[in-house]
Image 1 (cartoon, rainbow, N blue to C red):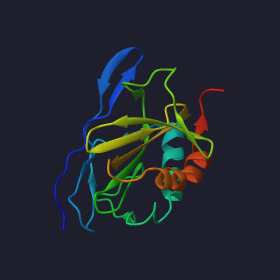
Image 2 (cartoon, rainbow, N blue to C red):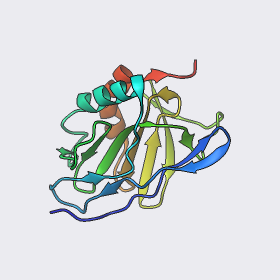
Image 3 (cartoon, helix red, strand yellow):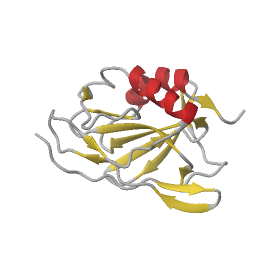
Image 4 (cartoon, rainbow, N blue to C red):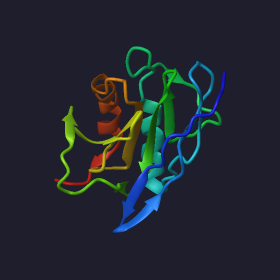
Length: 162
């Protein structure tokens, strides 16, 4: 079963200017393929790192979050579970609400910036490159998901601040 659901756009701050990337996902609950639009398109080494990151993601991010097919396949994104949870790699800039003084939740040596989007939560790694973004239903406990993402994030992204 395939349907359409639209995630809010990731608002980015680029060199002091506000920019917007496209929305991310289409799929209702179910087990069919997920169509993700507006996926970041990093270049050069970031493209290679993102493809390796997505390939290294586990088959599951926790109970009810098994990996799903993405159609058409993209090298910089993955989907998990029926809601679905979406992971992308390679976003440029940082979330509009992020400030250098923002508090990050550090889980297994990865700092995550959290944004409440109402019925969704977005977690991003603004102090790593290439940047990883997880969009998760707000009613889903994030800790186990962020722990499951940690090994791939640490292996395929690099810290950008000391």
